[in-house]
Length: 78
Ligand SMILES: [Zn+2]
Image 1 (cartoon, rainbow, N blue to C red):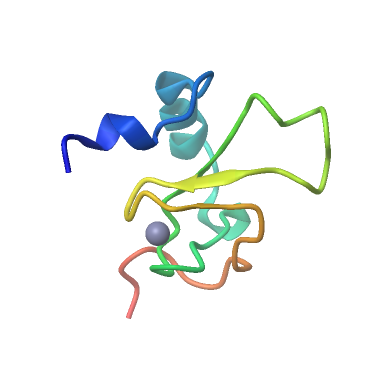
Image 2: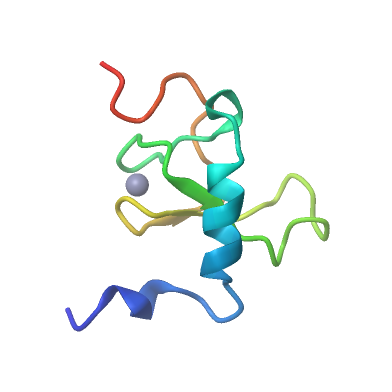
């Protein structure tokens, strides 16, 4: 592997994603179906265009999904 930047799609605004993540209540956060963390960030370029078909990117494992798990627990909660 040569770097994690390769997985970031064109048009994905990392700063916007980080801002959105920090301002999103945990109870509204979706979970990653791969690692079950709540480290998903929405692809803001699609929000407002196709509601219900948002693409999410996991900042924990780097996977992308359009079908995240529902929010249940905080990241690291045990
Ligand atoms: Zn993940």
